[in-house]
Every structure is written in structure tokens, then in C-alpha cells.
Image (cartoon, helix red, strand yellow):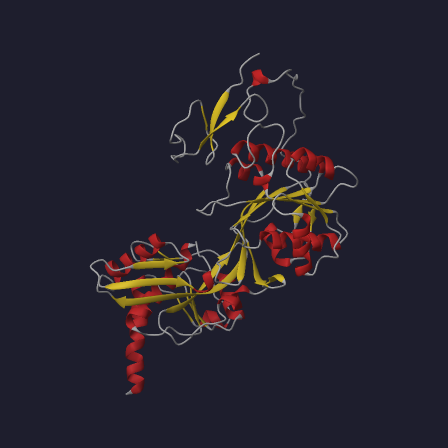
Length: 467
């Protein structure tokens, strides 16, 4: 009898090694190699198969042809449908990740109940909780009467045999993929081989039957979905459920979507009755704004197709340390260092003897460079002690030369600001025609020094008014 081959699989990146080592050569992580057999299933070579099936020719076609829109299953939860691009696509696989306790199971329970109430067959399979625990959550959310079919199972073959009985389900929810195991792989549940094999089996079922499958994934301490990255490439969409423990709102962010826009967000508010939709996130992030305090600027952001207004707060204080502190919450610290360098080099604003603290209000996270202008305005306002106009929004990218560069979707940002009562805007020149009242009160600097001079000039204007 031939001896079964053994490989050592990295649990971080999925790379295969012939012998054990303390460090993975592919990703550089230590102590991540785990011994796994390759006698069959995922990772086995062609020679391990008992019989080789002869290939069959497939039909080749052209790029030109009729196109049908992907049929979708609308859940009725507006923010969830927005994040998925209009609803769950039949025959697709969706991966949802998030920190423990953030509300992934709560969101999916509400979505399952909403779809089941609309007449769809929904199967909810949990590998982490018993059926009684899921029922308790449904009672707390007030959806216990919904005809959702529940199961507590971790074997992939048993799950597929169960949902194959009766009518084809419209939606299958697997919570979570790290708890599943298949007979095709002889490793422990949660390993790279088992996660990959279980995901392949569920995705194959979705493609062959037309049912939508939602997989819940655990996240690592770095915030990435645990397991091999190949799973994120296999699925049709990847969503991250984000939120801070000290804040009551949650953000469902789309990072991959084969059937809709990426970087879309859905905003929810967590309550004792579950997740509630937030139709206007700008009012949520600006709800506790102190309009007369220096160091605060309102940034008009774009998340996918949605404009969101959020307050950026800066505090510049004299430092007694040899190396002043730079603390950032909700933004890129490297980007802050760049803005400080541009202000010192091209505008003559000195921060070398000051601590700088930057915060995005409400625990919101910003990734686009269009926030540069709002950050610079907040920093100068805090340093000079001059409050910025309460009815003004800021957006624009700052280059290393000190120039203010235009950004995309300027009209959408201005419309959202005008809808919330803002009458002025500071934005890059060349942003197109500005219509409406907010366009008449706009200021378009070509260089950052022009904006700094305008903020500093407000001190002289106020002094003249008091005289």
C-alpha cells in the first residue's frame, strides 16, 4: 500500500511546504505551518485519483450576444440591498466578515426573516449556535413567527443533502464557514484545506442550482477575513460589517461585488430590538456637532454612490516633548504627516512644537484623499483658535507641491451639503459648473496657501468688526 504524502500548509496564506519550518517562505508568518495529508480531496495530485475522467469539449461562443440582468432577491432591508447592489443575486455566493459580536448573525437573522415573510424559502445553518439560541435571538428581534428553516450542522455533505430535499431554497446562510468540514479533506475544521474545500462545495451548489449562498467568515486581529485569500476570489461578493464598540451604529461596507458597485456602504443603528436602518447617515454623523468650536471642519465624502457628510476634528496643543505626538483616529496617519509637511513647507504653518490629534467624529473611517482639504482646514483652525464657518463644507486633494487638485463626484457632494442646509463650500477649482445657492458661496483655491490666508484673514475681519 502506498504511503500517504504529507504536506505542511500555512494557515495564514495557504502555501504548501514539503517539510516543516518555523517561518512560512510565502507570507513570512511564524508558526503557521500545520501538517495535512494529501491522500485525496483538496490538495491531492492527479496520481492519487483512482480513475481519470476523459475531458469533454465545451461550447465556445462570442462576446456579442443578448445580455440579461442578473435576477435578484430583494430583502426589503434598504441598506442591505444597497450594499449588495440591489439584492441577493440568484446563483451567487456572498462572504460577510466582521469582528465578534458586531452583529453579523443579527443582520442575517433579520434578512432571513424578511425574505421568508415575502414567500421565499430561506435555510439558516449555524455551526456555532444551537437551534434554541437562534430562536432566542429571533424572539428578541421580534421575527420568531417568520418561516425560516433552521439547522445546526457542520458537515458539508449533510448540509447539501438536507437542503436538496423539497423545493430549492432561494437563500442559504452558513454561519460560519470556519466551522464547516467535508469528507474530502482529512484535516481539522478551520484549517486552510477545510475552509477552501467547504467553500468550493457551497459555491458549486449555488452555481448549479441558482440558490444564493451567504457565508459568514471570522476575522483576524488585523481585521482581515480568516482563512485563505483564495476564498475571497472564489465568491461573487465580499462585505465587511464594521463598527466600534463605543458607538451604536454599524457600517456594512462592500469591497467586492461582481454584480454591482464596490465601496458601497449600508448604515445601521444597533438597538435592543436589533439593527435599524439609517436612511440619512449624514444627520447621524453630524448630530452632536459643536458649530462654534475651532478645529472642526465638515467633509463631504463619497462612499460608493452615496454622499456622506462627516465632521473632522483636530486639536493642536503646545508640546513639552522632544518629539511631538501625532495621534489619528479614523484616517491614515501617513496622510496626516504629509498634510503637516505641506503646511509647513508651502504655507509657513509650524507644527514642530505642537502635539497634533485628529479624529473623525462618530467612529467613521475615511480612506479617500478628498479629505485632505478638510483636514488641513481643521488643523489651521485649531492652531489659530479660529472657528470655521458653520455652514461650510470642505473637500479636495492636496498634492506635495501645495496645489489643490479636483476630486470626483463634486456635484453629488454639493447636493448632499445643500440638502442638509449648508450654504458655502471650499473645493478645488475646475470642479465643473456650480449651480444653486451653495455654488454662489463657494471658494475655489488653486493652492493650499490661499485657503490658509483666507482662514487667517478671518481674524483680521473679526478684529475690525469689534473695533
